[in-house]
Image (cartoon, rainbow, N blue to C red; front, side, top):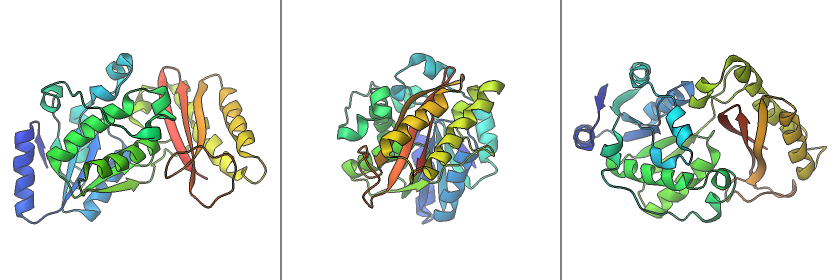
Length: 279
């Protein structure tokens, strides 16, 4: 496994893999890796001859500067973890390498970026689009792998990929969870012991909510989920929405054969956690 920090070195290594007729699988990350990230790398290894992992904390997708400062970083530990996986190449650039000039591009994702995460984190998805579009252009992968835990982000990236016409195949991979059900996230490392214990209520409530669709209306279920979580003194729900998978439109009843997902964001102390489940 090689580690490179410049775009020039990245392209040189990828060109070498291309000459060997190897397909390129790409896993973009912000580091602080966990088993969820590693599952993406392993899936990429099953589908592609060469796996590239980027480690870059992208400043343009943080609308809260304190959140950016607090975001966990440990490049050496990340590299050690990747050595045990199918990863062949790590791209760990500086901010100046990705943004030699300020990125002023504005992307229009319509209503996809105005609900849920987009509503509560204005500008977030534009920042995601900026960095992902740059990384796609630098790596030029055949396939790119993203976790379904970031459900809305995956929808945005699929739309971005279509807009850019890259031809890259976007692969959404299942959420990986802790034994108590909490969705794995780099932000979990910021929770203290009590917060971590109580955060498990988020996924437990979502799993129980799926079982209540036969007895509760959509409105009643949303109310039940929010009240159940907010009764816990460690947790405060920011939003819980039931949406159509394809266009993220809120659903008003259980009718219709389209796929439905329940998406949630919860504040646990100063740490913001998101999760989703299929309904």
